[in-house]
Image (tube, rainbow, N blue to C red; front, side, top):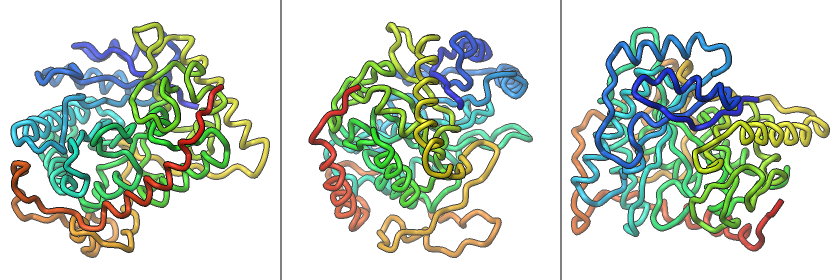
Length: 381
């Protein structure tokens, strides 16, 4: 198992590895700049190089992930905020690539009630601009992916279902540089009950059906202060929330999940994950593994998205949308899908009409209705 944690970053970066060691983590996640400020942190090339070398040679920390700034909103109707968001994401990705990170986790943002259909194209444009404009990774280092994180479902947040994330990736022509980060608290709050083996298997099947398990780069491993289907982002320490240790075990112990980096974002005693939080998380994973290894034959683990491999695009859905039609271009074996070279326009004010993705709402609504049947009861440990 690989139980990690979000830890302090700092100007020199290398100490973050030792912060992880202190609490027993085997992977870490850091912010590349203040999560609630636009001002970017500037890192000298030698600082990034020193971190890459330290990470590559570290005896216990296997992966470093970066988390993009919370202020980013690629779904905003305000042109100034949208452009600042693209610029900030581009800088965060440049730093993550310079560090040799395994992925940059991103909250896409909120459409503020405009509707998912109306923002798909502008979000895809923002993602593509950041991927193409960010500084390339140093020689010998593969560019890390942007990992889109599922949302808890409040307000107009984007990414509240796997279908929404699927549409975003398809709108980017199935770009190999896009992947998924699943947050266990957000998943629970959005109404997905994985507290049984059957429920956890359904989650894995749904990811494979929509996005593809090969794009899953990591999990955020958190308990929840909010009830099942509560649609709010409120993390709790492992075993102290409404999911509970027994409710988390089936998902994190699943054969296709257990070996991924499982990153704690729990409050601890107010300062983030502690030694005891990592220890509690490892016990939950071990309990989850027993649920599968003691029963049916063990399934083979899917290869995970990382900075050392490329992910093949999954087959396109049978129902094409306006935003995903460009993904239908034939792809040559071993080569990247040809990108649309037409010049993209920035988003227009809310009063103007944007290109919309047809039929998306119908699919999302169907999925949401299906998920809502799981909201009738709250699982407590």
